[in-house]
Length: 302
Image (tube, rainbow, N blue to C red):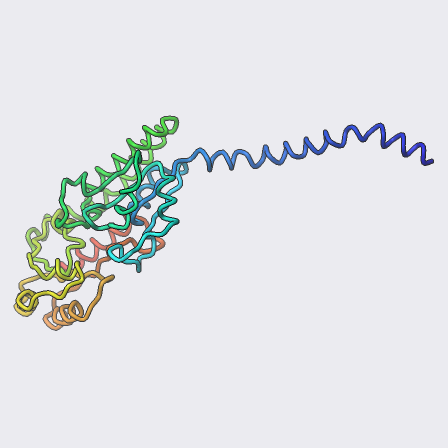
């Protein structure tokens, strides 16, 4: 009996390594496509989540997108980059930044990085530091940046060029409701006076034909400084005399002085619209902007 077992083991022991090899090859054949997709896909790093969201829509499944500022409660002005941020940027194929001093945490890392494809929104907008940095509210500029991203993706990944073109066209078409509403505001409320505690949405308001009352109060609040007494008095005078049809304020940087302006606006029956610098969670760029513009439209209706 033992000799028979020994004979069988000797006869088939040769096939055991082959069987193990077949199993390994089978497992690898299942896992390999997933590994290949991840390793071959492009990496895009965006300074803020709105740029990251736009990049995700245009790149689709052909790129992995990381937004450094993804929490709506984070303040880009005060954010300090981490070693993880630096590592992601060093590995990125394309980097998206606002520029204009808005995301200085990105500029510090980029100063040590060479040979990267960098899309600087401020540079594309032909603006300089000190100008309004909240350029993602400028829809024509966003379309221009989206096109720049599409071209860069096509240059780095020509195999998926058609997909990038299709995704870009879909993104541009999705902006049409915003453009339609903007035209309606321009037609119905041309030159309606609006005052804002910060310049966050100024580009959008201007593009829709509204008249933004200039004031130094805005810039002081943006920079985290106390506005001059004269600037506070001027802002209050505009509200008391109801020279503005709408007050726009940044919901993410509420302070005692901005709350005073909000209270004064309510007392004088001036509609108030809150906007945000960074994109809220569970939405995308176009729905975020459309919602905020809709709030302005409803406020203008009284």
